[in-house]
Length: 402
Image (tube, rainbow, N blue to C red; front, side, top):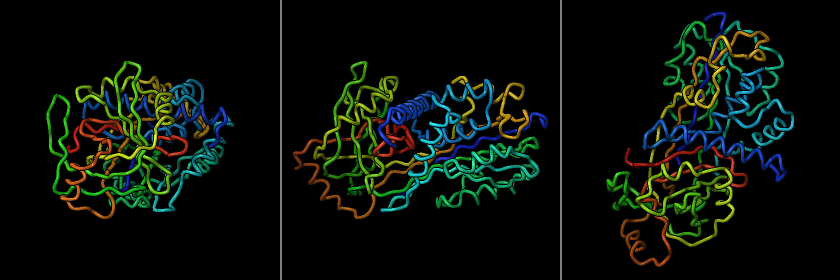
């Protein structure tokens, strides 16, 4: 499976210049899932029925870094949006342990959550802030020169070279930077690369009829497998029926959680408002192992979000106001505010390994008596850590060909 890359960039400017099962762990997982769904709904509102992918893990990591430096009302607004604060020693200790265990490169899995803080030469940071950040989710501090955008872009590319994606995220994100007042940027990244627990066959010469919104039917390339999967049929709070499927990646460390309306005439925007953390948790715990024909379209999604508008709509307003922002914990002086917040995400889904002939696939289609899961209409996906439900990314496929 090609790598999934998600990047969140926060630019801070100077005002003067211009796992367990404890109640705590269960509560935090629910809060993090609720944050993921809130972010999904906000992104969906901006995308008007189109494909998108966004990483709650990457966004929340940047906000957590900011929490270390936030004080007063600014800190309260961040805590209100996240649902927790890393200023709480219990939360900090638990999340630190979680982030440490998330980094894995064994059994064919590449997974990393990291943060790089690029600091303008001459900027002074609080020793306490540096100590807290340095031990948080594989975070590092690097020098930067914001007065020379090309130079800084090079540093960003170097900092993200370990993502092995072939295209550093520095250039497209850095187009908004370069102002002399910029003192610090926070770039958090989440990468994931793995193969399926059970590999798909390729329907190279066959196409799956995919019904888009408004009834448009497209022929899209599809993957196919017959396997035992985790599957269930449920109803949301409004009575809409959905099919839910969970596909495991190698090593059972992560999974792809799919939510598909049962009725092709039920648009996703009727399902989305009723998705909650407890609903997702309930569905996940009630899935049953079932042998099924699974048809899933290949897709590739790449997008970029202006997080500033999303976060402001959540009530995080002081952070972006040079007169109200209180990030005194970063430098010991009350002279920082966030001028830009950008998020870039890319996800590609495909079969991995041996490809079967089209003829074999057609035979399976026609002769199999097993129940089928066909993602032949718009669906929602969540890339999750399998044992805890930690949401790496969440998104929607409305048209696999876009």
